[in-house]
Amino acid sequence: MFKKQFYGFRFLAVLVLFTSLLSCGVSKSLKDIPDVSLYKINIAERIQKNDSTFISGPNTLSKNKQGQWEMYVEGNPYQIGLTTGLLTKELFKYQEHAFLSKVNELVPSKTKQWLLRKMLAWYNRKMYLNVPEEYKAEIYGLSQYAASDYKHIADNYLRILYLHSAHDIGHALQDLALVGCSSFAAWDNNTKDGNLIIGRNFDFYAGDDFAKNKIIAFVKPTNGYKFMSVTWAGMIGVVSGMNEHGLTVTINAGKSKIPLVAKTPISIVTREILQYAKNIDEAIAIAKKREVFVSESIFIGSAIDNKAITIEVSPKNFGVYESPNTGQLICSNHFQSNAYKNDKNNIKHKAESHSQYRYERMQELLNTNNKLTVKKAIAVLRNKEGLNNKNIGFGNEKSLNQLLAHHGIVFKPSELLVWVSSNPYQLGEFVAYNLNEVFSDVDKLQLSNQALNIEKDAFLYTKAYSDYESYRTFSRTLEKAISKDLKVENKLLTNVIETNPNYWKAYYLVGKYYYNKGYLTAALQMFETALTKEITTVPDKEMVAHYIQKINRKLN
Image (cartoon, rainbow, N blue to C red):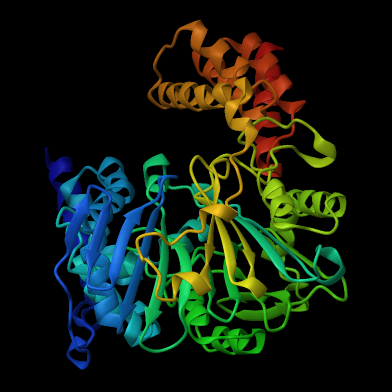
C-alpha cells in the first residue's frame, strides 16, 4: 500500500513539475489571435443547389463527375478563410475526424489527452511567430467552422494552425510511413514541343478516408497572384499548385531529425511562393527568408524560365539544385545540391531508404519515354514496376505508383494547364483544368475542361488490381491479429500471399504471425522467401535477416 502511494505521489510530483515547465514560454502563443479587424467582411449566405453544389456570392464548391470537389474562392485573407470554411464545413468536419479520430484511438486516457494538449502547446510555442499574419487570419476565418469534438487537443484556431505542420511531422517521423513522393520535369529537347512538363505523385498517406475528398481549389486573393492547388478541407497551405504566371510548386520530403520546436510549416512557405513569386529567382528569395523545422525539397517549375529547379531547405542549411544542361530534373526524397554533399542524414537516407531506387526508376522511364508528353508523364506516375520492369509486388514503396497516393498531378505551365488524378490513387481519370478559363468570367460551377481529360488506367479493370484491394484488407486483418496476439484461420494466411505474391511484406507478415505462435520452421520458410523479394529499405532487410538468425539459433 505504501509503495503504491509513494509511486502515486512521485507521478503527481513529476506531472506538476512537467506542466509548470510547459507553461513557461507557451502563454503568448496560446493567446495570439490574428487581428482580423483589418479586413472587411462581406460573406454571402451559402446556397445549396443540390447535395454536391454550394454557392456563396461569386464563390463556389461543387463535385465533378469524377468525384472530386472543385472550389473557387476570392477576397482578402479573412474573407477567403471564412468563405472556404462556410462552403466546405461538412467536408472540413469529415476531414478533421478522419485525421484526428486516430488520436482518440491511440490516446484513450483523458489524463494522457490532457498531457498531449500541453505537449502540443509547448512544441508549437513558436509557430505563431513564423506564420505570416495574412495566413493566420485566413486560418482563423477557416477555424470558425472547425468541429468542436477535438478541443482536448487544442482550441479550434490553434488546432487548425497546428494541423498545418502535420505534413512536416510526418516527414520527420519516418516510422509513420506517411510520405515517399516522386517528382520529375522535362523541357527543351526532352519534350515534344520544347515546353516544360512536370509530373509528381503526392504519397502522403493518412488513411483511406483522408484521401476520399480531395479539393482542387482556385484562389483569387486580394494581394498576390491567382493560383490553384490540390488540397483538402481545413488546409490553406500548398503541397501541389500553379499560379497565373505558370509558376508551379510541389514538395518532396528530405531526411530530418525529429524537430524540437515547430517554426514555419513547409506548406505555408510554398503557399507564399505560389501567391507571390512569378519566376524562379523570386521563389528562391521567399524560401530563403523563412525558418523551417524539417528538411524538404521544394520543386519549382517556371513558365517564364522554361525550366525547373529544387530549393532544398532544412533548419540549418539551404541549397538550390539545377540539373546542368540536361533539360530534365528528377527528385525523390534525398537532396542533390552541393550544400548537402556532406550531410550525414542525407547520405544515410540515400543509402538506406527507397529514395535512390525511385530516382533511378524515374531516370529509366524518362529515358525510355523521350520527347515527354502529358500522356507519357501520367504513364510514368502510374508505373508500378521496379527497375528493369521487375515485378516487385503491388504497394511496394520502391514503385513510383505505390497505390496509396493522395494525388498525382501533371503541369504544362506555358499553357497554364494542369491535370489532377481522380480516385483511386493515380488510377482514375486525370481531370484537366485551364487557369485562363477558370479565372475568366466563365461558369464557376464547371471548372474542369473535360475535353482534355486523360482516361483511367486500364489496370483498374484487371484481376491484379482486384487482388491488390483484397490484399490490403487481408493484410490489415493479419496485422491487427499480430498486434493483439489473436489466432487466425489458415485461409487468411494463404490469401495474404496469393493476392500479392511478389511483395516481400506479404511473406514477412505471415512469417511474423508464425513466429509469434511458435511455428518456427514455417516462419523460417516465410522469412527466407521474403528475403528473395525486393525489400523496401535496408532496415527492413536487416529486420527480416534478424528473424532468420533468431530462428536458426532456436532450431539448432
